[in-house]
Length: 296
Image (cartoon, rainbow, N blue to C red; front, side, top):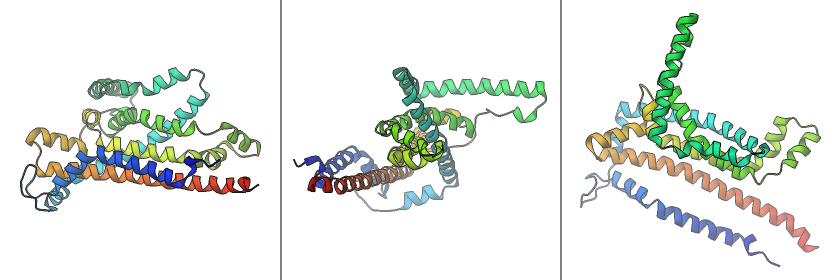
């Protein structure tokens, strides 16, 4: 019997529907980008296309420095959070108390951003004082200032925030992987790393790449926790929020929001395209394997 779900056009229609839903949800973002190219700003009846607002933003040295700090923070968050989420997902599969484990992993999402940021701020202040005390007592200078507010504390705050999202995405992908394949690879003489990298990772890499995209976007757009924990540097989101609070939505604000939106859409679009191509490849491979069986 012919399976409609194996029809490639059915898959394409599903993706077309998904893209339509995403487009509808992204309409406010598209409108923000549209306004950011208007010379007269928001609310003007006349629309004259211009790049001036973007030139002003990218020509501001403080904003360029904030973009660099944002990129450093996002890259560090991805490099730290994704391995942690992978380990958490693997520990979950071996855990006997799965409900409690998931509740523990997801608990940071139940705490409002301002409360979490304030709690971490107090915690790091006390921890910094404790390390300063140890430095004075033990005479070890390099212990002092470890947990002063700065890049490290902001990174820890972002890891706590983004880890649950990465954990869920990787766990969903990993749930379809059969651990017997790893056991078979180990029985054939492969090391634990070889079994993971050559057998398991190719089957879960879509989830890993999707998690990287999630963490990147969340890190890039995060303002509350980072604003409380960042210390002496500014991120792009914090500059945008500060500008909105001080002078309202200006042309520069729309350009900054446009940059954040464009970066987010590029990351999400890349993941969607990769996932679509990967699904098409798997579908073609499954049909190619099924054809000899059907012919018999």
